[in-house]
Image 1: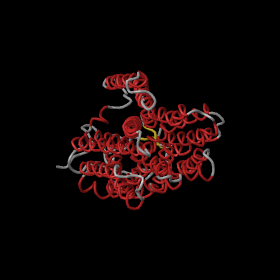
Image 2 (image 1 turned 90 degrees about the vertical axis):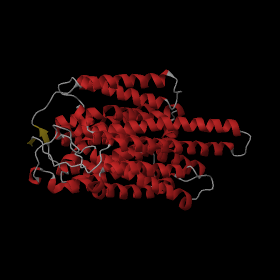
Image 3 (image 1 turned 60 degrees about the vertical axis):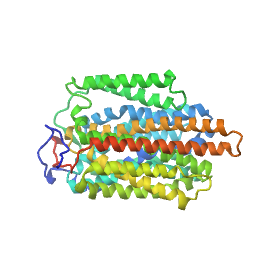
Image 4 (image 1 turned 60 degrees about the horizontal axis):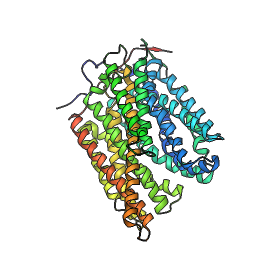
Length: 500
C-alpha cells in the first residue's frame, strides 16, 4: 500500500513550476547550498587534525583540548531549532547569508587567535552561526526542488555531502596542517563562505511569509537549555565518570528540560517545533535514522583515524586520502538511493538495509591488526561502510523534509540536523568511554606481554567497532519498524510569500 509522507491537515495546493522563483536556477542553487553545507560539516573534523599543532602553538593543556571541539558542538547543537524557526519567520535567504558571513568572521577570528580563550570563543561563534546557516540551507533546498524526480537527485547530493563532509575535513585538515599551518584549517572557511555568499546574493530570492508569528520564547529557552545540558553531559562523560554529577546531572537536567519543552509545545500558540512535524511516522523514522547513523559513524572517523595514524603510522594527508573510497561509495549509494530506489521501493527497506550494511562493515573492521594492509584489509570494509551510510543519509534527509508545510521547512530541517548532532555527541562520549575502559582492562590482564600498550589500543578500537555495529543494528530495527511501507507521495507545495 502506498504511504503518504504528510499528516492530516498538511496538504497544500500544488504549485506550478512558474510560481517557484528559484526553479530556473535550481541546480546552481544546489551548488551554493552544497558548498555551505560542506563548510559546516567538514568543520566538525578539520579542526581535530589541527589540534596538536594548535595546542603546541597556544600552549593549552590536554584537559582543555576538548573545549576546542565541545564549544562548537554545544553552541551548534543547542541552537539549531531556534535557527530553523528564525529562518522560517525572517526569510531563509536573509538567515542563510547572515549565517555564512558570521561563520566566516568567526573562522577568521579563530585563525588569528593568539590565546586559548579566543580560539574557544571563536569556535562557539562558529557553532552559533552554523545553527542559523544549516537549517536555512536545507529548507532552501526543500522549497527549491519541488519536482519529485529532481528532488531525489538534489537530496542525494546533499546527503552525500552531509555524510562525506567529515572525511573531507580529515583530508583537507591533513593537507593544510602538513603543508601550511593549523590556522588555515579555520581560514579556509572564509573562502568557502565567500563563494557561497556571492552565489546566494545572486541566485536566491527573499521569500518572506505573509504572516510572521511571534517566537515561542518559553520553548526556545527550554529546548536550548535542554540540548545544551545533553551535549555538555555527554561531552563531560569523556573526562568524568558516568556516575559523576558533571555527567549524569547534566544529562538528567537535559531530559527534564526537553520533557518540559514537549509539554509547552502542546499548549503554545506558535510552537517552536509544531508536533505535527515529528508525529508523522516517516519523518520520525528519518530523524531517528540520522540520529543512529550519527552515533554509529563516529566509530569510523575517530577510531579508524587513530588506528591509521597511531598503529600504522600514516601521515595526516595519507590518512585523509585513505578515506576517499568511503566518500565515493557514500556518494554513489546516496544519489542512487534518493533518485532511483526511493521512487521504486520507498525509504523503509533502504534505511534498514543501509544500517545493516554499515554494521557489517564495522564488524569487518574488528579484524584489523598491526599487519593489516590497506588494499586487502582496510579498503573493503571502508567501502562497505560508505555504501551503507549512503543508503541511510540520502533517503533520511529527503523523506525527513517531505510533506512538511512550507512554513515549517526550516524547523523540520533543524530537527534533522539536531538529531545528527545529538547522535554524534552520544557516539563520541559512549564510544570513547567504552574504548578507554577496554584499553585499561586489557593492560591490567596483559601487562606482562610484549607490545601490551599497542595491543591495548587495537583492542579499544575493536571494542568501538563492535559497539558501533550494535548501535547501527538497533537503528535498523527501530527505523525498520517505524518507517512506513511503500513509496512516499507528496505533491509540490506552495507557501504564501511576499517577493522583494
